[in-house]
Amino acid sequence: MMDKTEFTAAVLEAEPTLYRVAKAMLGSGHDCADAAQQAILRAWEQLGTLRKPKYFKTWLTRILINECSAMLRLRQRLAPYEPEQAAAIPAPAPEDHSDLYAALLALDEKYRLPVVLYYLEGFKTREIASMLGVPEGTVKTRLRAAREQLRKDLEGACFA
Image (cartoon, rainbow, N blue to C red; front, side, top):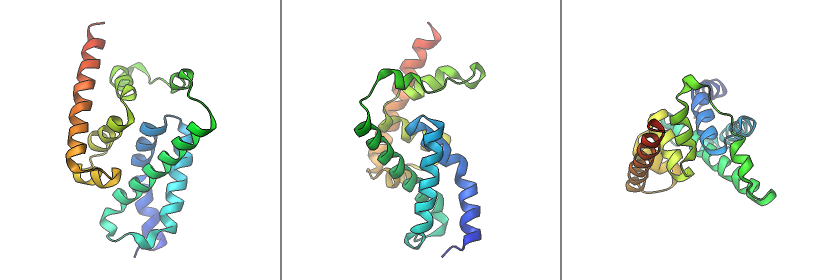
């Protein structure tokens, strides 16, 4: 089992991934920080359930995804969806590949999250399947569908 020092080091190493995954799911930087903090706290409390320390990052990311999903459910119960809220996600600076960023944000979460986990965070499809609780084939299908949608959206942006 990990001690406090090992846990802290592993969390610090996983921190950028936690932020990017939370950002892909929640959009708001404030919510991302809240979700990450809650996931870290939950991970510390449940550290005894981690079977293999080498999979800590995958395990912690799964906890974060659960936390983000809970926050999204709460958001839906508390306030009806208003299209203006989607526009509240800060736009990236032009040098940040804004067309790609906008196309990624436009993807449905079930496609956006596997793309972030696979292409930005480098997780394997089997790890993503485990995190999301879906078969590996479903992850591959979602990645393929996301690539097709991104290709379509970006081709339109290039010729607009």
